[in-house]
Image (cartoon, rainbow, N blue to C red; front, side, top):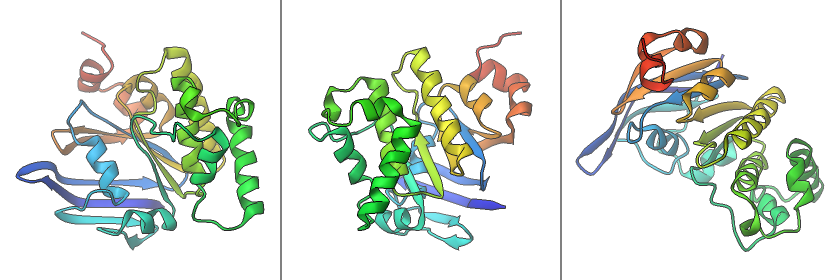
Length: 238
């Protein structure tokens, strides 16, 4: 069953047509990835889903109800959490204070404590650094914190924008192990990622986006064996 359905989504930046009738769906419990080059429309798509950008036309449905053009805070309340590209942690706040910022929708102190402990279980490095200022963390630790903060709102779907960006390969593997664990605990994930190789191994379904249009959508097993995908995104030549 689809938790997220997007139909004929069109987005403009002034006269620039950034998304040109994008349609896709994400089934509950899955990890679905969107792959494409810089400027293809990946970030614009996530920002439109989460309410940061208003679409020109088309529809976005979450759990069967339209969230098209809704305010970002209302979309978050409904269960759509967005972890943007570039981490964007609050540098002067501690790790734990950053996590609490992610739970600002709740007034239940016991629930907040439970959610924090849940994140520390998935991200033990954050537990070790809970009193440290977020600005003093490494890039990989800041990415863990950004994802954990997103999980503090108990989302039904987590939108992740380039979680591997700027990280060493060993940290990329660790981050994706944690994303997989989050998914196994019941959170659906929509993943935008330039590292097509790892994205197509952790996700079950994938879409290729090129110049604002979805050109291919299939299981990741099929995409990994697609000649065009191999040449353009996996670096595999004839």
